[in-house]
Image (tube, rainbow, N blue to C red; front, top):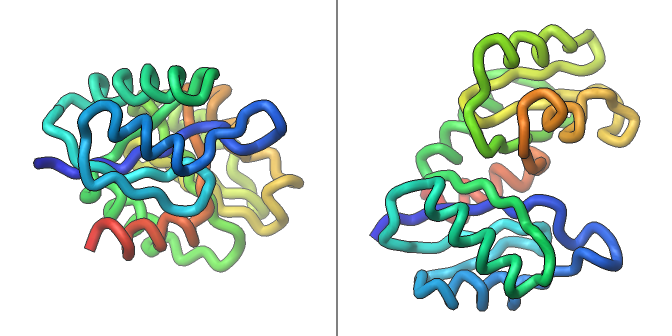
Length: 175
């Protein structure tokens, strides 16, 4: 049975969007999917399911999460191979500052990618590879203008993880 990794957007960020790991696991298992695991409490979940369509998997998860959490939870699904590719892309950049990855729901057009990448500067660099946007920053994330909000404004629904989490997930779930 195929394995997938889902990234939940905007959970556990305030008093009103709490969605604990045990409820995430219950929601995924409620779909009949198996070998469900989570990593830290920021919305990273691994599971096996027989569906093959990413769009159908995301729709099923979003419905289950809405039921269990009581609010909309946009969800982006990757295969282990796709996540390994994202980590390999990160290694190819050789950046030693802050590195964040925004996972995109849909693959962007070349024109939109060019617009985002043109916003790069010596302090902040954006590189897009498929459905991943690598944000490499010299200053802290909260002082940057190239953030997940900027990515979403140009490229659509996205959720962001730092490269440390991405590497940990590859090590833990994609080996």
